[in-house]
Amino acid sequence: MPQESLENDVDGLVRARIRGLRVAQGWTLDSLARRCHLSPSTLSRIETGHRRVALDQLVPIARALGTTLDHLVEPLDDRDVVIRPEPHQRPGVVTWMLSRDRAENGVVVAKMRLTPQPGVEPEQRVHPGYEWFTVLSGTVRLRLADRVIDVEAGEAAEFSTMVPHAFTAHRRVAEILTIFDRDGERAHLTAGQG
Image (cartoon, rainbow, N blue to C red; front, side, top):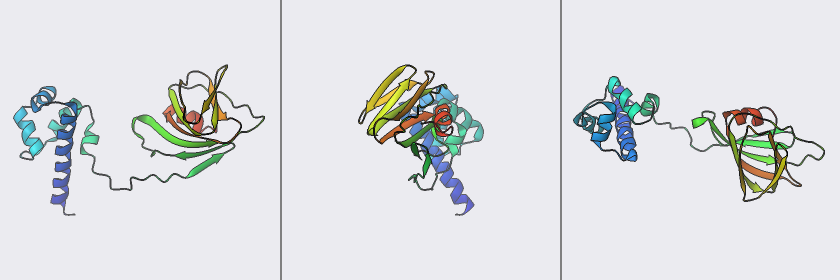
């Protein structure tokens, strides 16, 4: 693609993002202009392509829209949007990562298949944050300090991870869809604990 065409595509993308974010906030040009200290006519010309946007204008616009300059100018990603997870196995647990390594907001989504391990008492862990899971099949036994809670298929659990916790399959194989923050990912997915 010629350099001029690439620049026009990026300019158009940035203009569309500015307008889209402004409209999503329910703001008029005047509202955004007050927030980023530009005139409404300047913003209008930027959005319509009658004026090239300068870097010193993009920074306050991005800040006012609650985004970053990087996100505003990030080129379209043409890689495949389908995630093809590979299974990662350890005793009693198979995990498929369903979010990319660069997961936004530090959130990691995974599907886990838990297999009962009779006679093995899972170590309860503590770390900052919250965890959430929904049981797709089977029953998951959630241990929160001294409490034992059986979570059935179709039910979900959400809990503070500052409480000692562990979860395992109860009686038969169970599958869950879980959301961890980064601390939860380190504690459960990389430390060998399900």
